[in-house]
Image (cartoon, rainbow, N blue to C red; front, side):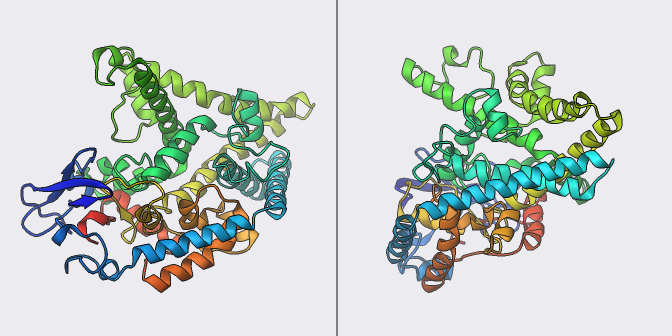
Length: 465
């Protein structure tokens, strides 16, 4: 059978009582360059054989979801590519002007938030403004610029991929001040996540990253507590460490290839800062655990990325009030509100970003797929979720991640282009019967959390869902 351009077979393992597992046992994909579910008990299911090997179209067996049996993938993909051609041809000065407007809105939120933060010990308005500014500086500006959405549109050259926020620490803190190193996020997100969406090697596959929680022999209360903790801290406990490891691994693999040595060789393994194996996400707690065992490399790498932001954001900025002659109370006001805003912006980002690619109505995949192929485009739609779209205020509060389906179809478009493309993509999906999931953030929360704690499981493409 051929799946995603790779010939694979199927093997049956021991029987399983897991909900959703095929009757009589768990089926796993096996084959060259394919990494199947390693732990069906933790992940909640295995893959099952599909009659005749067809993944869509009239040749599919009855065990395949009905929408797939009637799918004209080539026709659907042709119309989707037509939408891309149309919106790309319309990009121009309006898109750049819109970016600059969004930048101004972000700056207003930030500086007004700072003023209010200095005025009282806990300023609700100040916290909300600071939290929102931090959120959109990442999700709306840094995100789309580093994807290359404005590289050919912005005449100034400032908002160009590889230029914006890249380079020394001062440039990073000026353009996009956050816990993550932009170059590391570029590798982890733009390459590994976007071109392996929902696959085993997707570094942001929530269900896989949370399998230790899903399978933990503890009550649901404790699992929910773990999820709440990560929601409040995930940018520095998960995202900064995991993106740092992704950049390190990519550079090391490139180095080994140039030197002509195997990554598994003793020479390659000697002195590694991080393990090069894929698996669970790398968190700050793993770095601390490694350091306790005498391996300080991971903690050093992560600290070199996070400390500049921490010192600037929670040290130098509040201290500027003292340097300007304001009383100590102003310093403490500013610091307190910055710390509260940090927790809130983590939660804001968690609710929006985590919910974009997880849920019991969202697909994950056990097999790779050729980039830009018809199936690649299909996976971008069925492996993503949109939130309500339309209007710059609404879109800004979602960080323009409410256009996640369109963004995964074409990652290097402007924000205005996503606004234009969304209704067109939704219409084509309805025409061909392709699932197009769009719900509010609050509707997605129970689906997201359910998949994190193990009460829900995502759909699996290779299982025929």
